[in-house]
Image (cartoon, rainbow, N blue to C red; front, side, top):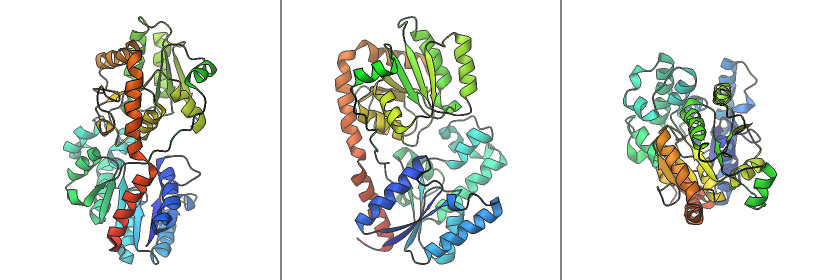
Length: 374
């Protein structure tokens, strides 16, 4: 079988889609599926209209000799890919890791609601968001299968009016963060005091950093040497830094920006608790990496998180932005160090369900079903 992979990001670019595309290129040939990748980056240097025409041309040339086209996003490459698939008569598959229209609305077009609230009443969004949602829905409707990263996202897409049988859940693969040093060694190297909380995400409103900083300010009364390490970049950084200054937490909150993978792994492994106070996750690869590293997790019941974390078994679940619950959960971890090994061992076992061979075999089975193979 031969497929064309249409992707917005591609190695050596940074991001989940680039990593995913690289994995498929490397692993699908082992499943007797040849991959021809057409990265959007090939045409990004052109003006916008010319860019889309050039991308369509490159896709069309690749698709003529393929059995199916697999788009790794539903709008930026998805719209052009859907048009090429219709023109060539090739089956189309689309991967969704979230609701593109809602995500753009939160970042650019003034949406304040959570994804669940928006999905129940999308008509109140601005015309730009509704346009993106219409494009996304048209691409999804044309596809033979929609591949989503969690059962939570499957439930979201069914609310768009898409047949559940058409939506295939394929969890993302674990890419272990290789860290060879012992935790105590890393803590000494990083100058961590006890306790140290780490959080890693885009610095955007729905990741809940404002409330997390408030909770650290409260926990400081009980743990005078507490430190919060925030990994990531985003439009909220200046506001969060200002909040830290106003709260007098300069000695307690560190902003690292983006980190290289080896540094990221070391920073996470050395933590006493990993906190992800998020309003939305399709399925968090960051949580899977932390589970594999053996760090206790406190996160929210939002999105796909409960598919990874069972409360009190391999981590702790709270409601988004509930400061009291967040403080209680962090305190529970710090007050019971004897339970750390039990929780982290359970988390490590759960992370094994996301091994690359399992994920690739599932994707290959879906692709071959389009091609008529068993």
